[in-house]
Image 1 (cartoon, rainbow, N blue to C red):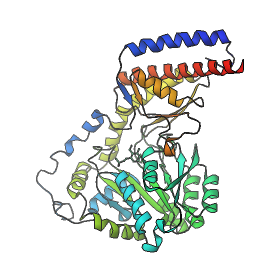
Image 2: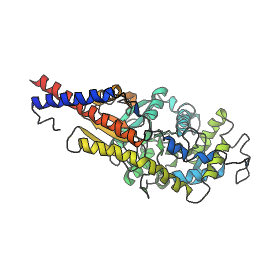
Image 3: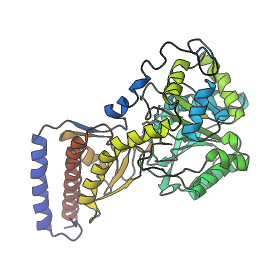
Image 4: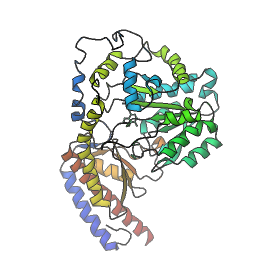
Length: 430
Ligand code: PMP
């Protein structure tokens, strides 16, 4: 379908054929969902042995009675699990509660209101606080900034990470910029993996921005490869050590998409100074994390190689769903400019771009035909995609036949919206 070269009559014919397809789909009364990147129930089943795994033995290998209060810093063996996932030395890892998003919120509020290195370092003491947000990005990161009144400045993503020239220029020119959100591996939603050069330039940012600058390195998909061995992300920790900027790096991960989402273990990895500053603030909020759950996870991944073997089982379930999405996109759009997409060999998302100005229409059309998509704009701060083109496709939850049905609807909606736009534009020109 080449809209630019099509005659008016061709466009009319396509519009009426696609409208008929769309009406037929609508009549099926579908109820499908490609919205959030959650594990499917089969993926969750993979970790069901967590239930009852302790068999009444609540002592950690190091002798901690995990049933009791305390242990703000997490149990040591859980630190080792954090190291296995994040690739940061266990000593720098703090295992925490069930959600890395909660941890990010806590670290951000700690830095903002109380200061990670003493009260004078609290960001709110400066006149305005701003954050860099590579786009498209993770809506929940943006929601945290929005709730705290932190102004968000967007930076475009390249195929090797955020546009670092722009990041450096902005940080240099505006001291109110206190941080940046990053999903460095299988970025949500674009699937990008930050290159070695990007990571190394990230590690240098604090030298430009100053000591209160923090990189929120949300490594949510650190080991979530679809093929093995998966690509290696350059270590931000090592890069920061080389620059002497380790206080600028706050790294997050969790087992939400490894074991049970919602009752997994979250981790933060940070410098000694950051951990000390944070725990002082955290100690007011809690007497300690859920160490019983930390112990359950240690036992679950006790056997050497078990973590990797487990991730391979996830990949087996995810791969056909991703392949199905890509098959539909390739069939529909590989020979025309109606859609562009990016998909990595891991993570949870496929990022799709319609022609400018059509994402909202496509999401609406799909919704009315029984296929729920993430709201258009969600991948941008304040929900505003300036070109109204990005749609995040999350195929992990539906079964393969459901993904197949949903994608038939999706491509029909994209084509229909594109043809209708072309017709409107033609009419405006004539
Ligand atoms: N970060 C990213 C980039 C995510 O995609 C998600 C889940 N969609 C999270 C964090 C949430 O992680 P958690 O369950 O550990 O809070």
